[in-house]
Image 1 (spheres, rainbow, N blue to C red):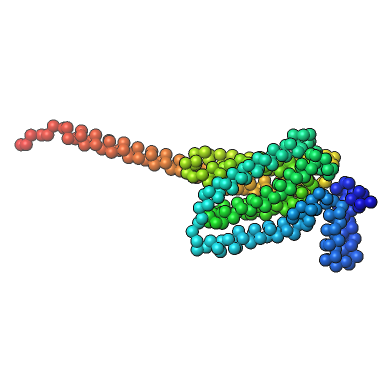
Image 2: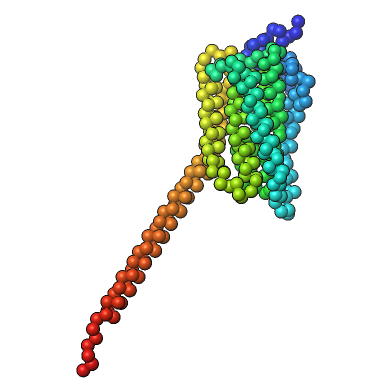
Length: 332
């Protein structure tokens, strides 16, 4: 009998693996054998067998390697290459890239609905379906596409580097683009469905609007009048993490048949993103609002001073006219 047949419950299997790893470490096994043994147990007991034959899914090393390569390029190699070069325009490239991301995000949003969230998924507690029926397979395939889409989003930062948009490469940006491929890999490998896909469907909706904004921005100055909703996008992203935090807390406080440890990680991740996006929002839009108010106040003060100066000039002119209109005394 397959060892997986004894561990249909994710939490039971993960607890068993953790205890076994502790026992083996205490028995003075070397680190290489311990890691190898531990990974084999993880894959055998809780890994989704449907993922094993897919590219990059056998183990996390390819994904981690791609993330490290991405960071090395955007932080060292790319800036060094562009140091003495002019910023690239990439107008057509940006348009078609963002258009592709709009279509891909909209497709994944639709698939999330059709594979579960519009077909009976519970907003309060939805366990993972590991069976191979049609909807479960559809959700699994979608999770893998979602994983690949996160790799494709590395291009966002690559374009920033080539265009010398250094201010756009914030800590929040790098954290987001480095972490999400790893999260998506874990999702596809172990938890392709259930509660863990709620952040994904919200993310797909937000990304559809976000890449639409970027696409319009890449189309030139004449479309600037359609870009008044940038602040709304950030507010929508903040709302996304508030929903995810509430969803995770509910799953932790109720008897939900979804791994508590994974739920806790989702809660921590959503909380970190909430703090980072709130900080970004306050630093950018609050400062902009303050600067705009100060500018308006300065403009109003300047207008008031100018008006007062004009009134003084008018009074002086009236006094001069009055003096000139007085009758002159005849010469004696």
